[in-house]
Image (cartoon, rainbow, N blue to C red; front, side, top):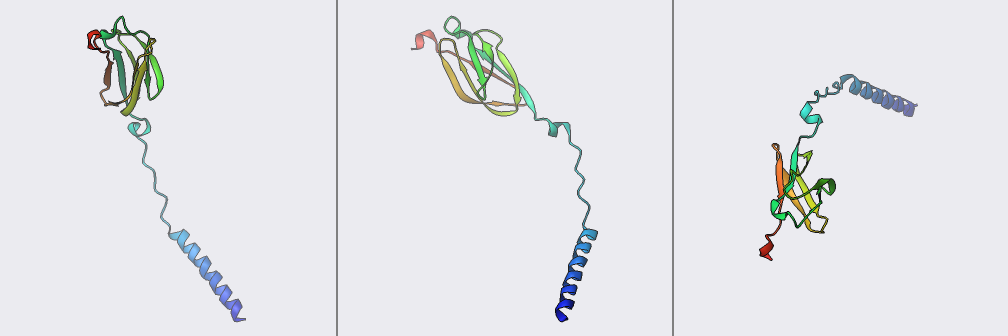
Amino acid sequence: MSTRIQTRAVAALFIALIASACGNAPDAPTPLPATASATASATALLLVQVDKLCVGRETDIRVFVDYVPIGVTNPGETGVSRMVAIGEHQLSAVSQEGTLWGPFPTTVLPDGRLERLGCMPPDAI
């Protein structure tokens, strides 16, 4: 009989603890409304041009940002651009002639970034 009383006492204590915990638990915190800057990653323009020094030596230069193609440009043209997340990226390019640039790191700041791919002067080699 004492085992029964102990079992009932333990069960009553357990129920009392659960009821107490549920009754005194604070409400779940209310999430703050999301701001526009928190919901969308900040981006800026990355513009890639090829120096005029490469005219006549390099053509159809495919440009890649983070190993994703963003377009084709030629020396002296306005270049290719893409809106990218602010921060570090890998830039690379390859011309129709097989010349490679990069990959190399570039940092895009909130006001954007201009990268100019160059060529060695003809008499440098």
